[in-house]
Image 1 (tube, one colour):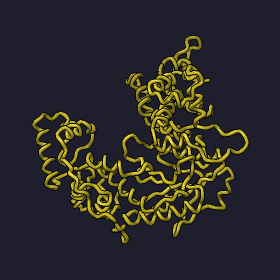
Image 2 (cartoon, one colour):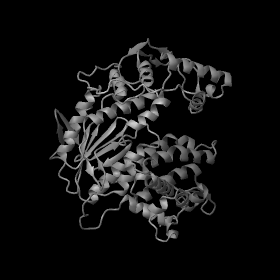
Image 3 (cartoon, one colour):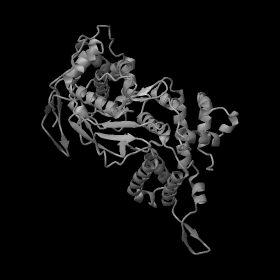
Image 4 (tube, helix red, strand yellow):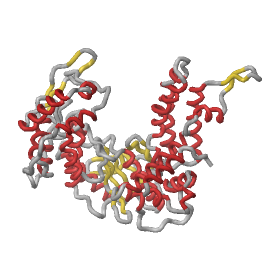
Length: 505
C-alpha cells in the first residue's frame, strides 16, 4: 500500500549537475525564527517533544540545537526529521509558475476559485465556449518517484548542498502505524513524499513544474483574454485544464497524462471529469463522456473544486445552498452547547462566529449575491441566534415567544453575515487590484477580444463590488472608479470597515 511501482519511462534531463554556488548553513537567528513559528497543540513524534517546550527553551538549548543543525548541514547525514524547507522555498518560488497556488506565500484556494468563476462568467458574458477538464491523480503524494525528485532539483540548478540534503531526507524512510495503544512494526517506504513533512509540498510543486514544462503548452491553447491566456490552474495536485476548443483541451490533457507518468503520477479515471460552459448548452445525454487517448471521462454539470461547487452556468445558488447545508450540520452538532444553560451567551456567540460562520462563508469572496441568496443567509443566521439567545416571556400573553428580528439584532450587536460577506468581498477585490502582475489581477481586468451579444447581461461579480462600494461610502469619492480607490490601501480599508455596518437596501 505504501510503495508504488517506479515509472517505466522517465524524463531525459538536459542538466544533470546541480550548481556549485556557495550555500551557507542556517544561522542561529533563522533557527530561533523557525522555533517561534512552530504551531501549538500539535501531536509530538516518538520523542514526545512538543513545540511549546522548544518555544520556552533557554539560550543554551538553542545553542545546542544550532550546533546539531550545523553538523547535519556539514555532514549531510540526517539523524532524524531534519529538513531544509526554509532554504529551498525561496529557490522554488523562482522556478514554479504562476498557475500553482498550493502551499505558496500570499496565495490561497480563493485565488483559484476566483479565477475559475471569473473565466466562467466572462465566457458566458461574451458568448464563448469554454471546455474544462478537472484532473485527479491517484495517491499523488505517495506515488512520486524519488529518483526523479533529485534529478529535477539538479535540472532546475538547485545548489548541490540542497540536492544532497533533500536526497538524505527522503532516503530510507521508515514508518510505524499506531492504532490505540498498539504500534505496528517498522515498514520501509521507497516511493512518494513524506506525509506531514513541510518539505513535501515544495518538492511536489517542483515535480509538477517539470511535468507542466514538458507538455509545452502552446499560445493557441487555453482561454484567451486581452493579453493573457489561461490554460492550466493548479492547487497542489488539484489541476484544471481550460480551453476554447474541445480537441485542444483533449490534446493538452493527453500530453499531461503521459508527462505525469514519467514521475510516477497516474490518473484517477473515476474522479477526472469534463465540463462544457456555453450559452448554447446541448443535451447532456448526447455527450456524456469525452475521450482522451485510451481514457473516457464523464461529462458533468457541476464539480466540487477546492471545496466549492462550480456549475456549468456559473450559478452561485447551488454553492450557497451547500454552504448553508454544511452550516446546518455544524449547528446541529453544537446544538447542546448552544442551548446549554451553563454556558454564557457570549461564549455561545463566539462558537458561532469562530466555527459555524466561517464554514458558511468559505469562498464567499467570489460569490455573486442576489437578494434571494442574501435572505437565505440571513434566515440561517437568525435561526442560530434564536438558539443562542432563546425565547422571551410575554407578560401580556402569559407565554413564551421567539425573539423578533430587531431584538436579535440588538442582542447580537455585531455585523450580520451579509455585511461580513460584503466586507470580505471588498477586501478581496482590493487585494486583487493591488496584486501587481498576478493572474488574479489579469483575470479581473482583462476581457475576451469580442463583442458582447445583445440583451441585458447577467449580474456580474464586479457589479456587486460596485454596489457594495457605493453603499459603504464610495459615493464620497466624486464618481471615482472603485479600482482607483482600491489602489490606496488605507482608503480601501476604511471602505471595508464601513461595509460591516452598512444598511441593506
